[in-house]
Image 1 (cartoon, helix red, strand yellow):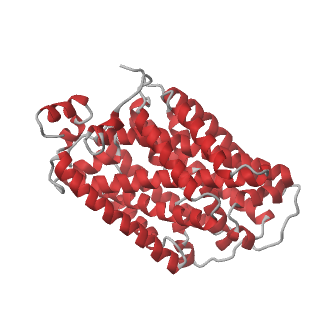
Image 2 (tube, helix red, strand yellow; image 1 turned 90 degrees about the horizontal axis):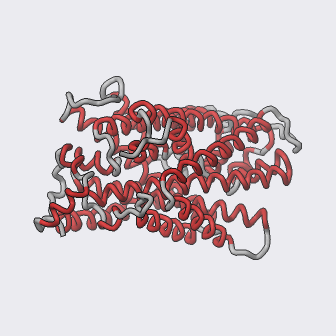
Image 3 (cartoon, one colour; image 1 turned 90 degrees about the vertical axis):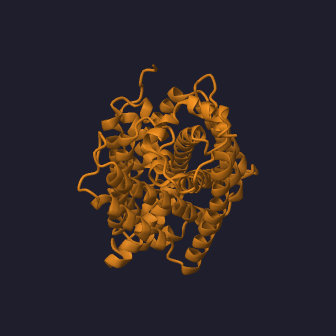
Length: 467
C-alpha cells in the first residue's frame, strides 16, 4: 500500500489553486466597480453558499470514501446513470476545460500586452499547457510540489499588492471616490452571481482524498480554510481598488489586475500583476489537468467513459485523461484568444454548468439521508437538511441571475440548455447500449464502490454485459 503523502496544507493549496484564477480577478474588478466595497458582502454570501457545497461533498465523500470519480459516483448511486453522465460531462469536463482555456487566453493576452512584439498570444497558451502537462505526467508528487509553490506565491502576491493599495502606500496617485456605490441589498444579492465565480472549485481536493493523511478531517477542513482565505484576500483587493482605481474604469476593464497594478506601482506593478496572472493560470491549469483526469479515470471504471481514460503510466497517472484535458484546454484557449466578449461569455456559461453540478451534490445528500439514514459517515452536514436546501435555493438563484444583461442571460440559457439536450441524447444512447443499464435507475451504493476495482469491468466485459 502506498503511503499517504498529502496533508492539510496540500488540501488548502489545491482548493485555493483552482479557485484563484485570472477570470476571478476579472469578476472581482467587475463586481467591485459596480457596487464599491459593498461587493464584499456579496462575496461573503457567495462564500457561505460554496461552503454548503463543500460540506455536502464532504459528507458524500465520507459515505463513499476513496472514490476516484467523486461526484460521478455519488450521483450514480443516488440518482442513476442519466443525470450522472449529463452533469459530469457538462458540469465538469466541458465546464472545466472551457474555463481553463479562457484562463490561459486571459493570461496570454496580458503577457502579450506587457511583453509586446509580434509573437501571437496563443503561442504563450501552447507553451504553458505543454509544460504543465509534462509536469503532471510525473505523478502526484510533482503535482503537490508545483501546487504548494504556486499557491504560496499567488496568494502572497495578491495579499501584498492588495495590502499596499489598502493602506495607501503605492507610488501611484490615489483617487478620491466613495466607498459605497450601491447599498441596496437587492442589488447586492443580485451580484452574488458574479461573486459566486470567485469561489467555485474548492471541491477539487475531493478526488485526491485517497492520497491525504487523515482525510476525514483534512479534506473538509482544508476546503473550508481555502474558501475563507480567498475571501480575505479578495476583500483586501477590493479595498485596494478603492484607493487607486476609478470604480467605472475598473468595471469596464478586461484586465483589472493590470489596471490596478499600474495604478499602484506603475510599470513595476503592472509586470508584477502580470506575473500574478501567470501564477493563477499555472495554479488553475495544474489543478484541472490533474484532478479532472482522475475524475475521468473513475468514470471510465464505471464504463461511463471509454476505457482508455482509466489507463495509467509508470507513475500511476491517468495519462490519456491528462492529454485529453490539455488538448481541450488548447481548443477553448484558441477560440477565446484575444476576444474580451467571448472570454466573458464563456466564463458565465461555464459557471452555469458548474452550478448545476453543485445543485446535484446537495440533492445527492438529501437522497442518501432518506435512503440510508443509518449508514456510517465520518462527516455529516449539521442541522439536517437545512444547509443542503439553502445551497440548492441559493445556487438556483445564481443561475437565474447569471448576468445583469437580459440578452446575454438569455443567450447563456440557450447555450447551456442546448448543450444539455445534446448531452441527454448522448447519455441515453451510451447508457442503454454501452453500459447496458436502465437510464434512470440508481445503482446500489456498494455496487458503485465495487466499480473502483478493475476486476469489475473485466468481469462484466467477459460476460458480454459491457462491450
